[in-house]
Image (cartoon, rainbow, N blue to C red; front, side, top):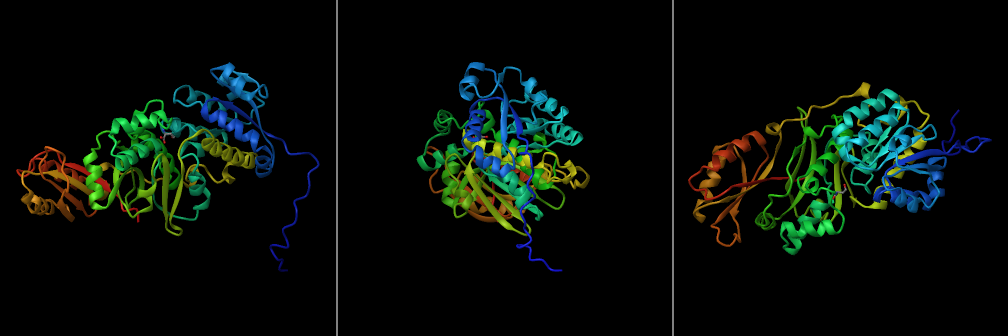
Length: 453
Ligand code: HSE
């Protein structure tokens, strides 16, 4: 007999006992931990309603006990022994927000071995030790959730894992480091040089403890490994990502890109090709008309192309105390819901369940493909045509060629080239030979161009 599905939504039978709280042990109570404590306390009732049961912080481990005690105000016991939290029988889930990759690995593996779920915002830990950590989690039937590790306020892991789960993902690309986006925006909008823009980003607290992680692209690469694992089932391995930061980016190129109608952004790109997946973090030209070119300041923006949904875009803060707490607590709610279900019945936090893994190989640099921007210092303005014709003979398809409108003081004419998509192997050979071309008067600069369509 047909039953109207809406009419048939009857209330669940009431239970006599109140559902048991999910008991959380937190390791680290710095900026993110303190934010998590505050948001959990402030939105307690709503969070419990959504989780189906209370989420209760039962123990905190911190290096600075006095500071930790001040934050929790005597409501939660504090210890200076993270392993005690990781292994304590009264803890159901361990939130690791201490950072670092050495001791944090031991705490997380100890928690997993003791049958505890783990929620972490530690992208470096997962990018370096993820394979080992996720294997251990599979073995012990627990979840390792990491929404707070990628573009914190943007629920991109959930979007890939749940909202877009019907799609064959074609590519994921994004501005996933706020510090470098802040620096590039300052260089473009205010003409600041790199060092001054970095100093400002550090003063505002966007940068990692070691800002080399930001400006060398490593932080973005950490996040890209997690996005790619989710989208394509690739293994979480930092070493697989081609990484290039923005330290050698010249202000001239920011100006020349603007002349051609582009902005330069540090992009993390994970793109499916027939033979595998490209994983790269690089400064790239984005058309100024594209939404991604308007993700400015310290903000993050991520686009995903799925075969069914098409292109979707996500925008939000990529760092911050409560912004990260928002993601950490979302994972706790998820864990509260899935705790007790068999691991094989959960939507996996990596792209696929181990048994269904259709892991794609990661392509080597030479096999990756994209359009390029070249800036070629030449002896004479008349060399434009010669450079263009020469590139075509080297199998580099030229889309547009012109002279830079404003060269640096003291430098000669500069030829600007935009190519059609070309394999990186072909491009690298051509660039090497171009450097020795008799018309070339200085170092050739090459950057990728991403159309993101
Ligand atoms: N340093 C990082 C950034 C913080 O600038 O995006 C969040 O991972």
